[in-house]
Image 1 (cartoon, rainbow, N blue to C red):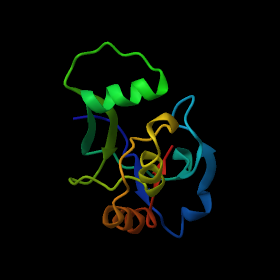
Image 2 (cartoon, helix red, strand yellow):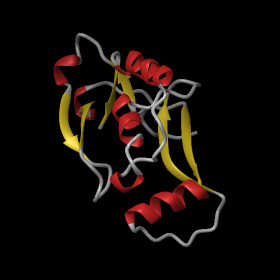
Image 3 (cartoon, rainbow, N blue to C red):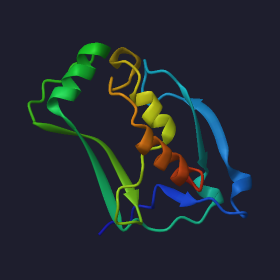
Image 4 (cartoon, one colour):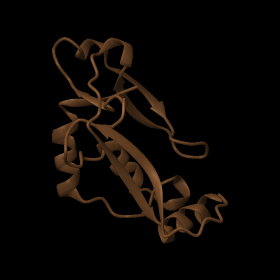
Amino acid sequence: FTKTPSGFVKITKDNEKFLKSSYKARRPGELAVLTRWLPKEDVKVVEAKFLDIILYSREQIQKENAATGAVNDDKSPWGIVSIKPQDVDYETPMAPITMMRNALPLKEGGSGKSLDKTSYDAAVKFWQEHANVL
């Protein structure tokens, strides 16, 4: 299928000492937010069994482009905004900080959509026990 490593691992007593954090922006012009991760050289990462493809509608992409001044003449009805390699067969929750960032106005790099507390609470529960691997 693919030799892509999974994008996250469970935090354990053995690897928690390697957790790193920093303020990062996903792209230029976006607000930096506090993120955390485990360096790939410090943890055992399994091969991804699945790829979770995240799509945005053309309408949403056009709204975000208009707010940030980005130009994209693509007319496809959907655009791929993320590919998440993972070893579980369900959609993992978005990181809580990503949910918060997405709730920001379009001009600040968000999607302008309100935060859903139930989804946020589920994300916190999942990401308290897992970390991205970079």
